Amino acid sequence: MENIFDNIFTWIMGNKPRSRFDFTASGMGPEIFLKSGIDFSNDEFQKEAVHAEETFYESIAEAYGVDSSEVMSTNGGSEAIQIASLYLSRESRRIVIPIPEYEPMYLVPERYGFRNFHFLRDEIYELKKDESLSFTDPNNPTGDMLSGRDFFRGALESNPVFCDETFSEFRFPARPYTNFTRYPEAVTSFTFTKFYGAGFLRVGYMFASREKIRKLKQYRLLSSGSPNIVSLYLGTKIIRKRGFFVNEVRKIIEQNRSIVRSKLSSFGLKFSDPANSTTTFVSGDFDAVWCKDLMEKHGVLVTPGKYFGMKSGFRICFTSTPENISEGLDLLGEFAGVA
Image (tube, rainbow, N blue to C red):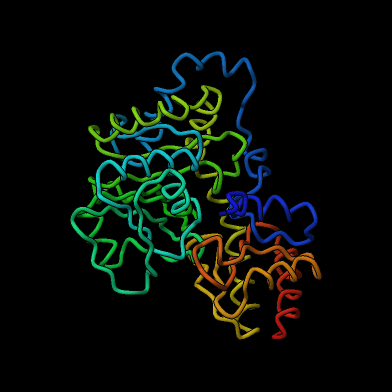
């Protein structure tokens, strides 16, 4: 019988307390949010609480250049994946998920009993008219940008598509961007968990046409109804102060990207370009047992490829301090016999 508890979350949470170098945290820590100077006092909240949801939609719409009727709030990224999977299952015969991919993107449809199909995204696959597509962009775990490729671009134009764009902010665009503005038939999502270090809020948002938003809000009733107004209120504060987060996060991530490129290249390992996200995927003969041994012997925690639909390889996240990244990678290289 399948072990439903063997998933990416139990791997991370089960090993994190014992790790010395945690390379599984794909989002920034709450320190970024706490440094922002955002006023979350009760007095300030009381002034705006009654209009929190409406103000949230208006602020997100203004930031992305869309209409507020094309925005919907969610309880974080996980709820967005559930809602989108339900939507795709009702709009198509089966959901197609290119791998490697963030485990919940294909695990949620599977656990709900929705018809789905996986293929290696470097292979040629012709999407049928009655199929839908679900993917992350930039991809989690590789960090590759996918929406510019012919297959993904064609699907965005002609098939029901869900695109989780949570990591796109790590490209540091002058203005936040969503594929929805270019492909209005698509459904896309974001969360404050990663770039803004505000996972404790459990709030995100989805973009879709006005007609699709009405459907998505109906599906949201099956899980939560809507996020709480405190999270929506703080989400508004965050998006209005986006410039601060861009400056702070860029200083950390760009330095860490340089370290990752330098170290992994010197080790002679094959890895994906870390330029677009906070992750890189190392290919090779490294299975889950190898990753477990790395953790047990050196305290370096990475995420095995099995949690992204791959038999081998592992994901490295680089959101901690440059010193931590550098020392942990040296131990990883030593354990792999390449440092």
